[in-house]
Length: 349
Image (cartoon, rainbow, N blue to C red):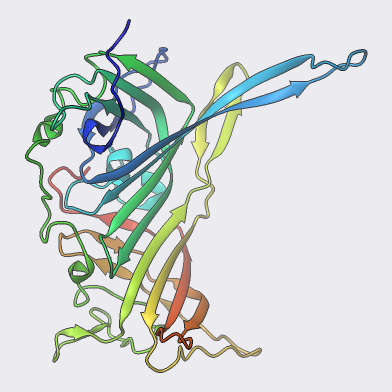
């Protein structure tokens, strides 16, 4: 088979779709079921590693056999938060609830379709597509900056990848209704792409260790009189790494399961413009920190709930140099196994 190559591949001629995992045991990988095109994608990267193990023997210096073990496939996708389904939700479709431990069990197939580089929008069968089968979510990260868009970054891992040419079952073809929006696509969430003004302080719960934060249960960084935040937060990052581990069995090369390494640490960082020091004491005797709830709510209805047991792990006071910069304080928090992400999208799974 052959195909007309592009002169280049750039953002307008590629798209990513995620669907439910179909374990048919066939080679090449089977197409994803109920696939949905990911909207708002900013970048996608695929890394393939062939794990080689060397065997030598007495009597010769040359290698006896260079054994090819399992291939490791790693896919990293980043998107803006725009009201369309999160990568995390699409990749864990079918989970019985939104808890981290439940969603961590699910697998998915990921397809990257590559279209002609002279098209204004993708449509029809992808001339070239690559499918990664049986992928697990390995890490997720969310960033809410004052400068720029709120973003999601997800890394998925697996062991199977196949390239296809002019396959009607691969890529973003007419079976995927969401792909048909390309050419007239716009964000579907309230507020469009979520930015700094779309973090709803009146509904969120910020960690009480941050100087200036109230001890109220809800809206503890919101002044109801001025209708403005109390502490001047510059950036929030929420992330976790599931640290997948292969569980192998005799008679089968592929792992029968890649388990998450629970307990899993969930971290969050809050960079704040300092107005009066960080006011975090560090004494030898007694506890210096307290447990705190954390919950971030966006205008489009997406909610990031880290439960009630986050605890301050470090605080960094920096800046304010002679060049005229502001002093900023970064508060880092840690909890375990608690990260519930919900979204109101009609395509949420």
